Length: 218
Image 1 (cartoon, rainbow, N blue to C red):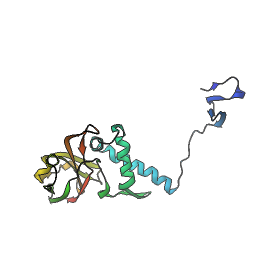
Image 2 (image 1 turned 90 degrees about the vertical axis):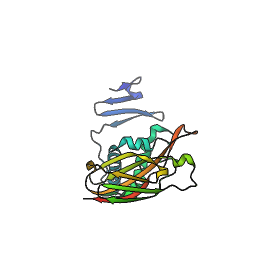
Image 3 (image 1 turned 30 degrees about the vertical axis):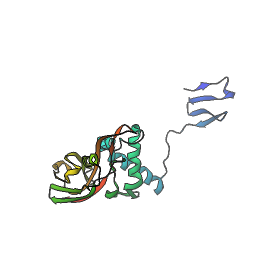
Image 4 (image 1 turned 30 degrees about the horizontal axis):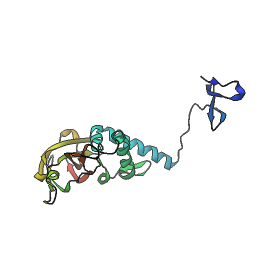
């Protein structure tokens, strides 16, 4: 419904039939309301839209994981935009319709924590042995960091994650992947988090994601 401002000659705001009136920079304007908006069909425009859709669908596979992984940013309410921005900037590559993820550049977390160092995975089909380094020069409270381990099947769009019982100081963990992750190439990731509170943000330290490689499940 439109609102007349002291006579039609002075303009009106809102919609009347297929006419829309609005006020901008001290003047009233009229335009025809379009029922449909034609989206650009250029490759660049379609690539942008497809990249956003692909990034949004990926985050929806494990929103709790992304929310936790990006919880140490300055403003917690912006975790979604930060996570999506990271995927769009680094992990989603190609042009429409040939878009794909670069597995090694997918990040599930960001922060000031120390990443898992030099992870190595040995696979016995569905059972993995994960080894990593914990140098002596790390602070004692850092060697006690907890680890989030992530398995991702880009074909089935399944993301599985677990908080390991082992701490960074243990340098080894055995992990059994669930059948729900599906067969094929499984990409592996990890990040660490500390129960020590960051005095600046009043939240625990979380590290950037480390890519641990991939395994083939038959």
